[in-house]
Image (cartoon, rainbow, N blue to C red; front, side, top):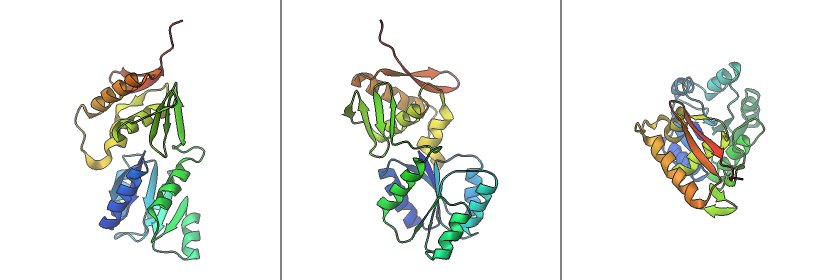
Length: 227
């Protein structure tokens, strides 16, 4: 799953991207409210980590705008404003959680994962389809109950397919979640990861297969044993 970090401190952004990555969450970052508004107009994120003291506007401006237009994306406010009044204000404006600086990275990751496990959000801890399972917190893949070592990108592709089990996942969804704003995506990058994942699942004895829906995307389906 991909998170948007709205924070103008480059050193903190680097730490956040690294910490979220270790927790199985990819991230893009922007440093102003204006840039966040532009990005959010074209991309959907699993969650937003939002600083309040931004160079152009108060982060609460972005939060109010999101909630006013009915956007329920979970928002974790991350700020040096640690007074009770500040926390209450942020929560009343629509924040889902509030973490004052300085903070422990492990706590931030755990809070985000908890937000995404809430009913209606994206991150269930254990995803299963056929005999394949993924622990989204530990980033551990299991086939027939046996742990398997899958690389990070292939695991991310598997997660998208598991969440869409039986339904088509558009190619653009993979591009957004795997590469985000980096633009570092070749014309066949998604196909390469799909190919690798197919082989890994086949070698592990998975009961599911990944099918290509030409011009649309990919879907995972369980292969029934002949009977």
